[in-house]
Image 1 (cartoon, rainbow, N blue to C red):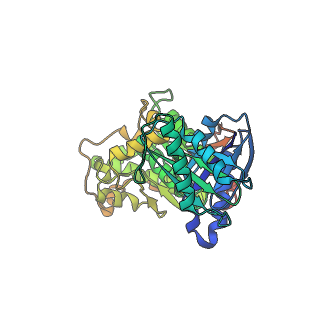
Image 2: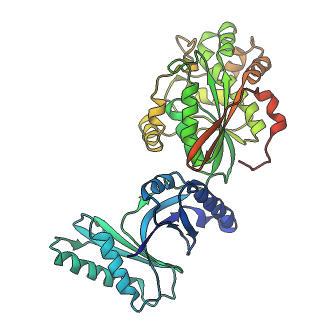
Length: 424
């Protein structure tokens, strides 16, 4: 009986030229960290793929679920491993292919082979023809009504001839794609608790960014009153993609009340968001983050008109990335369902931005309008108020579990605790 393994094909790493070894090293590190709780015999790299050899008693389903969170994977599959060097390697491939497809339901099939080891004496076209004829004969002998269909078959039996073993599989599983975790720099995400900001963070993680989070809250502290429990759950759901994260928690209601007291009502919501950005900018600099992530989608709500987004963003000298700007709500919610944040964001919570809302919010504010609206505020002092009340929590994904280290130390004392640049 052929041994089983997981064959993993990565996404964009081969495009990275002289930096390929860096990206590939990070990718392999992510694989090992993700799978450290499972009994794995070895991880090998025959050509442009990774083969994970499972121990005999390793359950496959949880391994498959874990691999679905490894950034950089294009697709992976549970494969049969066939050793090379026997008197008839083609016969061994035929038998393994039959064992792979025989229990599966399908009306049409094709065989596709890749020969990355050119020393293998049989050409790809001959492998496909020989194995395909063998399968067709066996299927028809078993009374199955099937046919060969090269374009869009119901099932594709895939064969890979590597510099190591030969691999046979028939079920590909899509990975998240993108770049490996922690390869492109640090970012800080404004995490609201809703659908959008968590998806925005995920999309930047998928591009290799290591993301920290800042959450602004108001109201009570029990579920359904505060939003802190939702923010924590979202970070716990997202941290397996990048292994570590920090969550900064900022009580925002005192700042909102001061804005409501001293600023024109129609600009309140935009001034809330500008103040959030200023506090986030201070945190980003301490985290050595190069950009801030916001979950804005162009035109989705009153504060997200193009004019308002530009006017609000001008408050920060740190660039603000809006990865959802061109997405509609259905696209955002589809991603939220796929990554497991949808049900968390659907929980009841008290959004701080709903406090003291204007009856008629400004739709087309300019930077000058908001600067003038803030003239009655002591902006630096309000930023200090927010920073002095901020606490930070650290999250780590280890051996299949998310652990949270709670802390109540104000963020203003964290400058002396900076980690080395580039570390996660």
